[in-house]
Image 1 (cartoon, rainbow, N blue to C red):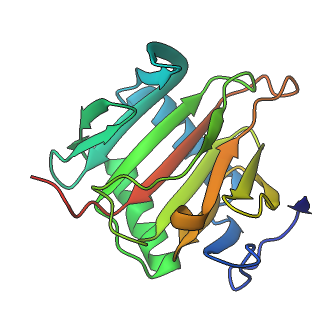
Image 2: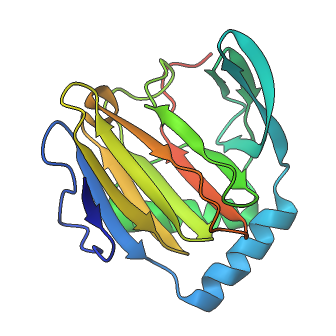
Image 3: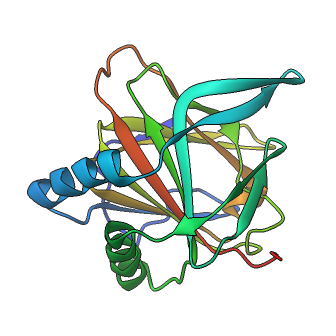
Length: 204
């Protein structure tokens, strides 16, 4: 496993092959990040997520929300959500990320992890509504958490820690060839909010 605890050079591709992952590190100072974390915790319409595990639908402790330019539908784990209109803070963050990355996004899926016991299993964001090989920008607020990638064929793994106010960009064929996850941990007792800005293209 390759671990990048302090890598924050967005020109470096953290993946050895078959995709692009760039880590920008914090793009806001601590005070700004704290302000956004508080706004996101209190102003977002959080709802418990529904996942399908071993053929059974379960309600997760982790909460989610879905926002966008229009009322896009988004389906994963046989569960469909419809995007809400942007809040002011989400608009601000979208514009900042677009400026930093040079990419364009029209929607955002948000996740709220209340503490380290809540995580995300191995998966890739390859839903049919997403732009093929389009960039996904992941911004993190709150608790610093480990984030890992695993190549679908070679099983090689790459990991890093996502800091408060940081930006990670996944692009190219990353979703085709790599899985990613947020592993649970007993060491974290504070919340983390993650924003994943995306480009929806196949939507009615």
